[in-house]
Image 1 (cartoon, helix red, strand yellow):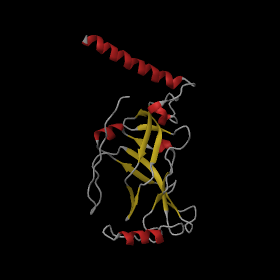
Image 2 (cartoon, rainbow, N blue to C red):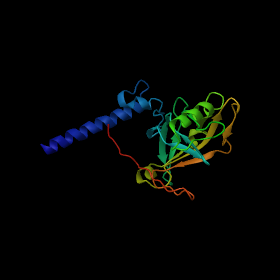
Image 3 (cartoon, one colour):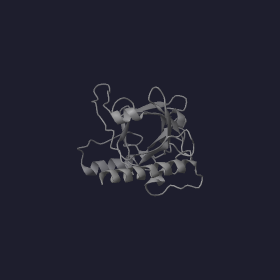
Image 4 (cartoon, rainbow, N blue to C red):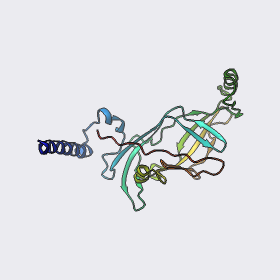
Length: 221
C-alpha cells in the first residue's frame, strides 16, 4: 500500500513538471489561480529558469539621517536565469517592462524635515503633519530602478543561507514637490545608489546596531 501511494505522488509531481514545461512553450497557455501574479514573467524565453515576484509592504528606507517609511507596497518582478560561478543568477525584465514598481512614499516632515518626537502629544503630531506634509510643503519619495533589469544581481544561495548579499539593485530616489520640480533625484542612471539587501546579519557603521532578516519558508503548490 505504501509503495502504491508513493508511485501515485511521484506520478502527480511528474504531471505538474510536464505541465510547467508545456506552459513555457505554449503561446496559448494562460496562468490561473495562485500563478496569475507571474503573468508578466518572461517564462517563454528558454533562458528563464524561474519567475520572480517580490512584494515589500512595510519597513523603511534610510538615506543619511532621513527615514522614509514604506506605506505603499513596492513590487519587484521578472525572471531569473542560469547561475554563474559567483552563484548569482541573470535577471530578466518582465514583459510589461515594469521591473520595479514606482510607489510614492510620504517623507515625514516634508520640505523642512521637522519630525516630532515619538513621545509628543497626538495634537502636536497632527498639527505638524497638517502644516508640513500638505500639497505644497509635502514631499514624496519614489524608489526607481536606475539601470536595466540585467544589472540586478540575485543570489538564491545567499537568500536561503541567510548570509551575504541576496539581492543587489542599482536604484535612484525621485523626490517630488511643487518647489523641487520633476527632476530632483538622489542618485542617477550614471551614478546610482547600489542597494544591497540581505536576509542575514548587517554590519552597519557605528552607532547603528546590526539587524538580521530571515530566508522565509518554501511552499509547494
